[in-house]
Length: 218
Image 1 (cartoon, rainbow, N blue to C red):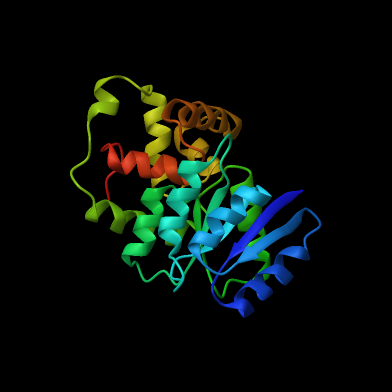
Image 2 (cartoon, rainbow, N blue to C red; image 1 turned 60 degrees about the horizontal axis):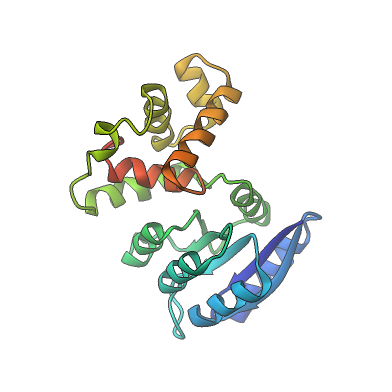
């Protein structure tokens, strides 16, 4: 069972998300709250697998809460699903830097929300390829010059770097496999090793690493 916490200052949004998620047999909403500080306490108390986090809340923003939740996590941290309007504001980029695992629109269809939660719970952070690519491209433009230390020290093999570059383009495992003429299972294995080497939880944070280190460019 996937345990989910809902964080949004609008009760009607939380209620709607709860209804959409609890239709699924494998998802359970274990708690909800309306601001960032309460979210940090809630996560420590109920230990969810995924947190649906609003970014703009009067009582404390989701950016600060995301960073604090991940910094304070003992053991495996929850995956943070940022709920946004995708206006590319600094809150979105801040949440990305803080370690958010994915993004979704507030008016998303129920099936898409359920699938997003499932994907994040299983370590797949790229929820929407088109939107993620747009966000990551803008994110890369706003960041400081990339660090080159990763490649110069041989952290990843050439094959792993090729896979990460294609991942950063928004490709699925199947698309990466077709591009490199290998099996999708091989791509999955490589990405697992990459994430272990980089110390990241999911695919989205792997893409963040790629842009920060100059492995991927807009």
